[in-house]
Image (cartoon, rainbow, N blue to C red; front, side, top):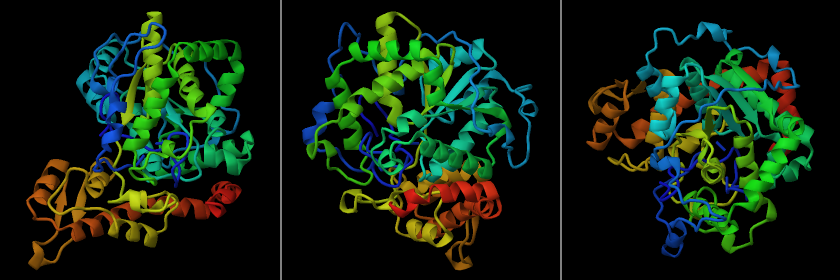
Length: 460
């Protein structure tokens, strides 16, 4: 668990750790202890240029909600309008009629960590808030970026939000691995983004209720507003605070590199220092956005944005930070940097998923820091509404769970054995991903996008 400024950490959509944030949107394990020599990094950095120190909203800070509505209607130049949800459910059929404030609040709060007071006040004053979802295009979509993203977006739509998914194509070129393989070409990054959208289509995301926005188009259309803001944020931000955030994030996010801090092996790049400032500017120059759905790898940028707003006496952006499962690996520091076994990916076949789950860390009678139980809590139960564990009669027989509390009680009491849980979990995940596999076999457009990204799979 993130200490101090941050809570649970989500990795980015890559099968290996990416240098920028040691990566969206993912799966890390929180069981590892932070080395003693990194503890000082959790202290609040000194404020820069008059910034007031502030607790991050992941610590339930209480503040005034933004009073903003969406002003501009940017459109995606690619043909997203042809994409339909698997059941072609129109947005206006998913109404908030009959849903009380409490129901809408609980629906959004179930997505992840947030400043509850700010969210509550916003929903009381706005029945249709604008929610932007940050997405870093990735050719390697882990299940949280695919399935959990669909769950959360559909939740927001049902809670009455107007959802816009921001495809951060322009920033993806700065990603060490993706940018290198793509050769820095924006067209290749956008092809990755289209592949991500095709995957969400196959998972049943209500695409009729979503508007997709390319970040490159957004910045190009508003360059005279965006770049001065980005430079002002950079001018008023402390490089040491940004570096500290990178170190803290890397020391907690043990995916791929374990407890070793990658910044012991190399210095920070200029892009790594400036990147959070660019992200903060994206959050702030769209002044009429009500809520951001972010992964904790954007939490540093969000804190910069809120500190900047404190300094300028402006309303601070509200954010929801996704709930995410732990790293599947027990000792990630002992595994290769490119080891993909830390998570389930949308591209994994049936045998691969069974192998990953069988080898996953799942300590008997222990729920805390147990990645298998996290997958059940955040993915399987919200998706199916139940979780069935099949056992022989002499082992207690099969049992179906409809809530996590009952399942956790049985597991911690020893009624459920890890082997039975793993077998049921692998079966549930394969059932979840089977329609996605079928879609990419049957759809000509899906097959085209998959082939267009094959360089990333061959070189991974």
